[in-house]
View 1: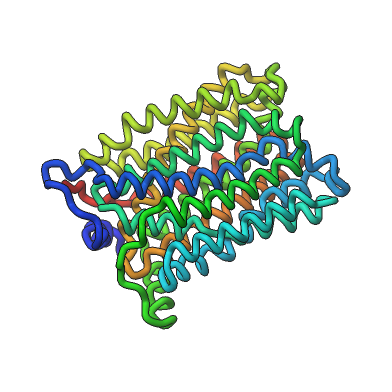
View 2: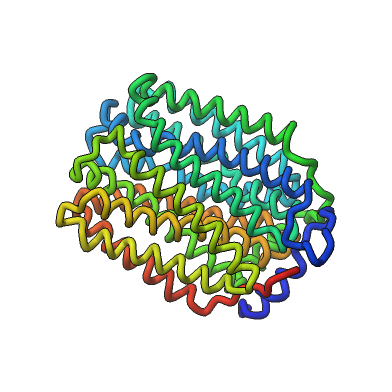
Length: 423
């Protein structure tokens, strides 16, 4: 199937059947129900992603203290194992949400995340820590949450709603960089995982008592329809491009952090102070995203914003490759991170919105399941391969590999067509 026609046609068919449409002259404004849905589901994402991100800045250092933690490749594997189990279960969770309902599926996934966090908190060695990370990843709810959000928002505001989720993820990432070193000093890695367990349980409370009721949408009546919807998703050229994109985006994101902390230390910034670079870069990038992405979308220039974002990420990888062997200063690294987060946050907002618009309504959960599967594989590959590249090729080789992967993504994404602006 060609995606030119699909972008224009399926975008019109994905409007939520239960969301009241405001006056056509004001269609880009969210209704109160849409604001409630977007805020509550962004909070669910934020709680879960804080539980994931908060271990990343300290995982390699703290895991090295456990038996078996003296091998960087094994530590990278344990860090990325979360993404591997996510990859296996995103599609089952997405299709389950189509078949059995969004809220039930989300609650089940958060319970698994809580159990995995408890195992990791108890872990006496690196092997059990990896088991805990694997069980955490089994709570693969990203597709179900995103599909739920797509169900309760109109196309005209969907990117804005997804941007709220993307902003919550970016803010949790920044927050984790600030508080993780402090928490590691106070309660250790075990205490951090105990906190992630509590965050997952809090997320369940938000789903049950804060998130809006599920809308009445068409659900597949049997597994044959579920498989048919999945087949449509896997044959859709536009969705395949987006799936490749999210894989590269998150592989590069995680791989970068196998080398960046060491570069910041070499530039004279102590580990506990890395937030002084990360936080301003993330916050400023969100302001730029809000001032650029939404106006471009309203003017029908989402394709341009999409390709520029990939280009920014590519430029950052080339910049890091160029300076990695020359002792870059803090201003250089901070500037590159600022540019990276502009591209990253714009892609985090626009890609899932496009997936939800392109997917058939009856297979939206399956489409987002495939999308999030590739995201999870990207996490795993970024951790495992990034750790191996950092050990064998050094930061220069790592960033060169990231640049090549991003260039391939840019070439594949070039023919895409964006849906026409609405309202």
